[in-house]
Figure (spheres, rainbow, N blue to C red):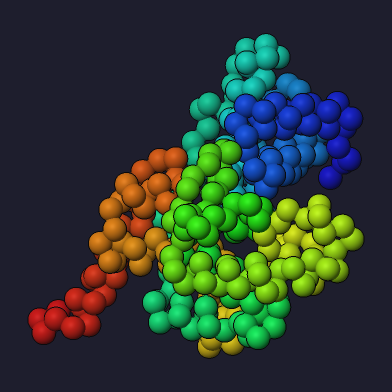
Amino acid sequence: MPPLADADDAAIERFIDAIWAERGLSAATLEAYRRDLQGLARWRGALAGLDRKALFDYLAMRTEAGYTPRSNARLLSTLRAWFASCVQRGERSDDPSALLHPPKLPRLLPKALSEAQVEALLAAPDAQTALGLRDRAMLELMYACGLRVSELVSLPATAVNLRQGVLRVMGKGSRERLVPLGEESQHWLRRWSSEARPALLETARDPSRVVALFVDANGDALTRQAFWALVKRCAAVAGIDPRRISPHGLRHSFATHLLNHGADLRALQMLLGHASLSTTQIYTLVAREHLKSLHARHHPRA
């Protein structure tokens, strides 16, 4: 593909800055928008003057190249945001993406661990070491509060209020929510904060400037990639196939287990930080599948 033209690069960065200011999107979402637009600009040669046929040809090319329907659906979402911004700024009078239909996506149900698997996973870290104590506290907190990975690793130490038993979480779209902490997660957070975190902070260049709740052996904030590796390691120790688990699986397990034990859907929406109830409702399908499975296994006439 040809290199990215300076004009396209500048236009994309203006768009990224504007949409961040308007919607408060996460860094990961902004980077996905950037990659989508840069890929189109390199393939087409220029973003200016794009028409519906060019977009259709690009989507067709990606389909032939093996891009998934989900990937193309995300690209179309990026294009709609881009052209809406162009129309709003008066740079275009039309939106060539308006008549393009997104590909049909299969409904993927969240994959939750069983309660026994969660127990094994939480018990996997060696809590006799500083890093093991951190790992146990992170896993306990993620399962207790149903956090997104990005929310977990970006938590400041000040987000935890052990006296009141709540956690202050900054979610998607800069929406803040308070989530109650269970007794187990409070226990491990208290141990991590008093026993292990201060010891690891001694290796930091300037401990007084570290705000992250969870840090690595160098006293730096833990990354999403590091937490991903942590979950895989603990899964192997717990006897769970690391290929069948992801950090988000604990969030799915949190939601599914609450519903299985009778939690209210609206309350679950608030705990998960979903802007729309329809997003939360997919977990009712998971719970329904679980009930159907139980019925099939145990009912005498199933």
